[in-house]
Image (cartoon, rainbow, N blue to C red; front, side, top):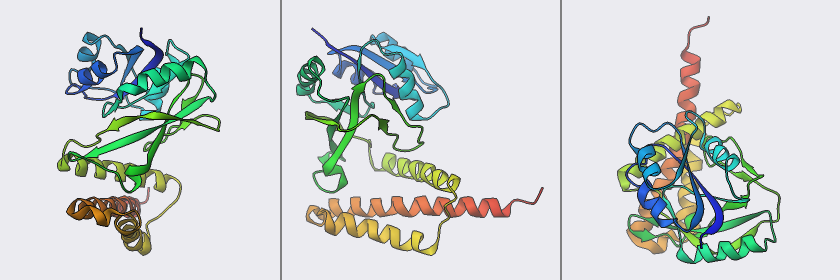
Length: 254
């Protein structure tokens, strides 16, 4: 008997892994795929796998999630990404929680796997995401790291999600630049500008915090590389912010 929950997953050009994702979550009573403008065979594969497909091209990931939530057939919605897979125990835990809920929304721990190894230290080692909620609640419109807005206190589930956000190092580097650019655009829209300390001290602090304070120094070369990549992400965001200011100042007066 399937768990009476709707799984909502936003996608764009995920034809390579949408079928595996849907197969891993067949225990859900409804699986809603919200397509954000795919140009590959994502939609056809999702429909063939039995998912309900909605279309929300051009908006943010939060907007796509909200389209799926609004159309959910069940009272409770589990919001996932295609790089996440629920542990088998999560299905039965969800069944019990939904039958007698104590909260409006629940956090789920993510077990992050990077380059074939689980990250147990740093922010990835303490990664909790608010993903299960009644369908009355919605996500904000942030371009990066959208958040579910639901009244506290939030419950916590025991079972976890396996999360593998990057296929390989090249994929990681590409996403670093994309997210850094989006972060810079959000800062620029709020009137922030990049100063010398943003371009120097922020990346250095990001490295020191990850490598020394959260224990990545105990992970050998793996910890060194991941800490440096985190520092590079911080630098890229403020470098993009600096570039936006330069581009704006270089425009001729109208």
